[in-house]
Length: 197
Image (cartoon, rainbow, N blue to C red; front, top):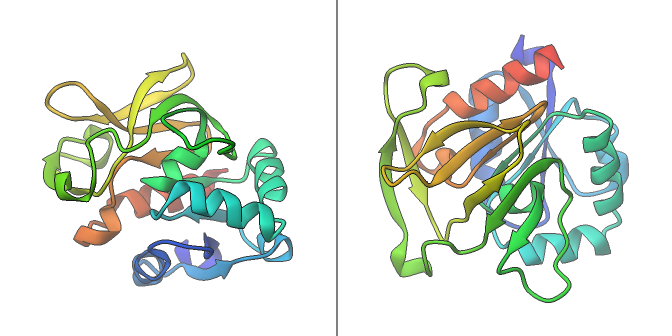
């Protein structure tokens, strides 16, 4: 199944190689997306972690921001990790002046919800949709979903109830980096979402 799917990873800034490595290890045809024409060649798109405001600016400069928005509205499956989750949120708390998102998730996300780089942490999360084994999750200057609409499915929370993984239709978002810890199950879930989209 995965071999017939072409997955794009938005390659403007952030941990692009790590996502490509995980997707390729799962048998997917994973490619870099930098231009609007690249977007037309993929069945799904991963928005990597990095700096959300920088990715936003670069996406606009490279002319891919509007095509990504249109593709999401048309049902293209998209998975965003950390900064990617921020870019998928319909609303942001703590964004820089003029910061824009692609949208697609009816959520409000707080940028840098846990503090700066020194407050980064790893934890084991219960994610029932992925089975009984906990997910090793790495939070690096991570966001947090602080509000979500009725169509949003919460997939994982921290011990204090903070929402860190959500799904709405063909759009998946995690506040953490599964690709950093070698966790592959969120990418497997995304490929399954692509196959049924």
